[in-house]
Amino acid sequence: FAVAAHLDTEILVVDEVLAVGDAEFQQKCLRRMSDVEAEGRSIVFVSHDLNAVAALCERVVWLDKGAVMADGPAAEVLTTARLSAAFGHPLRAIADGEHTLFVPV
Image (tube, rainbow, N blue to C red; front, side, top):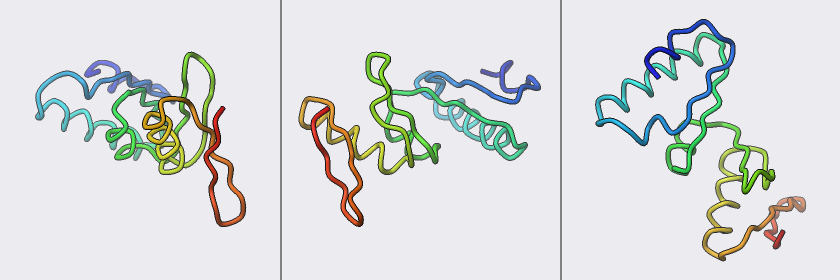
């Protein structure tokens, strides 16, 4: 991560970087990702840690076995993912005016 974060690329792909290292390393990574974003570059953050995704991402694409299950605002997609995990099978969110329905995929 230390090398990749200093390369001059338009898109930085970060895969589970917060799953390793101590708290100081994780904070350093978070600061660097904020710097990269402030520079106008894009970050693709790949993680199974839904709390980290919620803290870092505005938009989420949820993949399950290579299929796109949901794509949209982080709060909506993460709610769908958490409910799917709770029910033990994938759900899809359907917006209906001011309500959101969750139906089996």
